[in-house]
Length: 226
Image (cartoon, rainbow, N blue to C red; front, top):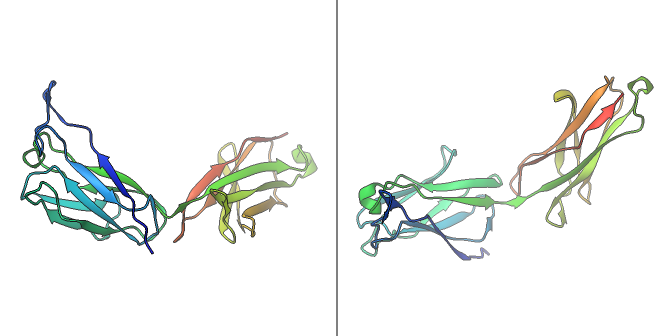
């Protein structure tokens, strides 16, 4: 069952010239984008939006920034200065997205032309802790370099998920491995059999987005081999 929580997002009042306030609807107030939803939505779920303080008869459209091919929504502003409730589905992959309106003209806003937007989190956010280590500090000793860490969403372990671990020397890729988290969200990648050069190494651990979790990456601290 979806839970709903009313949250309002107001755009700062628009200025006419340098001193006069915007003459929006009602006068002196800028348009607003009002969102009724939980703070984090299930991917593919829908959000309900009302745009207010816009001139009667004007048309307002909603879309996701940079997400071509997705369903949009639109409505005509009523005599109350508000649109009817517009329902628009969220992306089916977890992540942080921007929901925006079309450009509302100066005539419709009562001041300057404006586009309203709202950042929305879809799905759960993952966090990564990662450490780069070696059993020997000299390349002549043919060391094994390993990367270990955890993937969690808040205090919840992200289990049985694939992570990509890219070992880099002075920013250039040396080798990339793919591993999986265990039941506790822990992972480990051993770069055994790799021929190393002296220098500063880092590792980038990447967790790809899916239908539940948003993508995340983490760069480890520098490890120097001599």
